[in-house]
Image 1 (cartoon, rainbow, N blue to C red):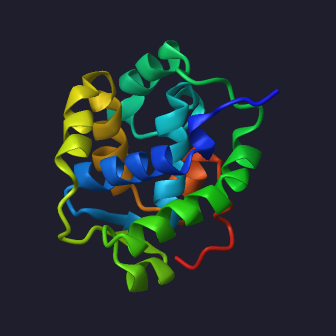
Image 2 (image 1 turned 90 degrees about the horizontal axis):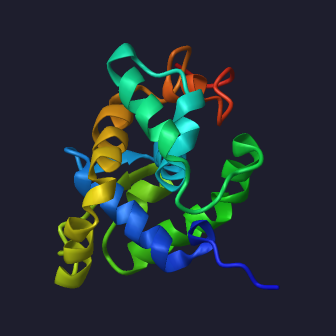
Length: 167
């Protein structure tokens, strides 16, 4: 039996990456930051287990109550590793299409180019108002949390190893 899941869909991945990058005030983020945020975009109920700053506590609980509109993840730490290849394919596809800087991606940073997003995709961003609070929290507030070190995004979420990062 074939089962579709948006996490493994290249087109849906490009939509998510562009949506998070467009919502970010700097229009860029570190590669591992995106990987973490994308997992929470797909499975917002997992935010409940993350140790986030106090100003995000109520909202993370609210997102946790929503559940996932896709499915449950058995082990988030393992699932984020499984998504690594998909994430890389998404980034390379967007770089090939001119939406992110290829050289910056090779350095571990997703940087949005000036290439305009097609109007129909922008319309989909605007029409998806249910996800707007989640996208804002992820792309603006959580993306601003330093990635590495104690109390960094990796540590707070427990999704990626942080102990060996140079800080």
